[in-house]
Length: 551
Image (cartoon, rainbow, N blue to C red; front, side, top):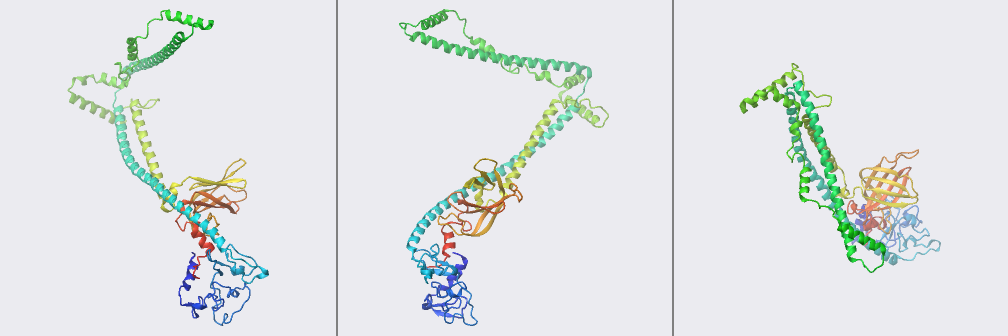
């Protein structure tokens, strides 16, 4: 019921007297209400007759005594001619439609607006038939709206679950970032310690040269050993596979020999059987020895498992050189030895930092030493992990701040798409994403706008009998802008206006201006929100005008 109709209805609640709406000084007994005589200057005493129709300049002239008294307000107080529509829903028909020789059954099903019979037109009362069909459709609409309401509750529950996931993830990310930052600090200290240790190394040229050659030999030996191990594993695998296939063929031929019919005169079969017998009688050599397999197992183990640790021979040359130079430390007690070694390393590092000594342990053209490179790699990986977590945290926080509509309901529909065919195109809208025009005969798709936000608009549309329309009142709309550029025009944009529906569906699409589109879409997400749109509420708001039956 519209607010204006509610305001009018309150003047007719008194059961004993009536006061003219625009002329409250004029009071009438209730018996003179709808008595087919225009008593009020504004016509408000005859909402159910045509007695005051003459007050409209477009209605037939039918003056009534005292209707135009001096100083009285003769402005129409009613929105139109009142059709009682017994058996259906009462409604107002515009005064311009009264006695125009046309039956307006869509509004005035009882035909009372053509009371004068202009041109011989007589409008029969069809309210029983129309009302019966309307109530049938209304029952279906109410059932559909009930289902839509349940679906909206499901969407709200799903949206709440998705939001909770985001909130939980934000909380866990905070813990992960805190732990990662601690790890980064530890790795920074590790890098500093390794670099300081490297600077404290003492290099001796002659020993370094020999140790360098030894390192090359060790590297080649390790590589060769790995190649031999891989080849051995491959050959062993091929042997096992061939043995398995041979055993399977032998089983097949043995079964064939046992089950074939000797009386069947087929020379080919007989030759095959004799050949198998000769093969089976030959000495095929020893089977695979389990002891040999155990030896192979030992050979294919890693060198470290077999007692050879290559890392002992691949250590930095500087370590051995330091051992050579400071061999005398081995004669000192352990406590003094460690203290002296640390002091010597710190002294060397200080002298290098001061520029007094050359940094002979500085990185060569190939880069830092392996220990420094590994430490820096670990630090870089940890820093990247922290940055990744922070980026994800920002994205989740932005997601919580976005407007997903009442009850966050559109969170559950995000990126879900619905489409409809219209002419040569298929039009698609994806919730909180974009709208698209797709040609049916092939070709590129046209972006009609990208989602920028939700807004609320007021609509006042006629609701079709099936309820698939916007109706009247405030509605939620999705605004889409910055679509594909329109030739000799603006970038395409689309306003998607939403109303209550049992399922997600596109009802209508129009181009209001050049490359400016408007879509009408039904969805359960907006049911019971801002009036919802559609359904009985929308129908009464537009068709019936909210007029009370007692009028």
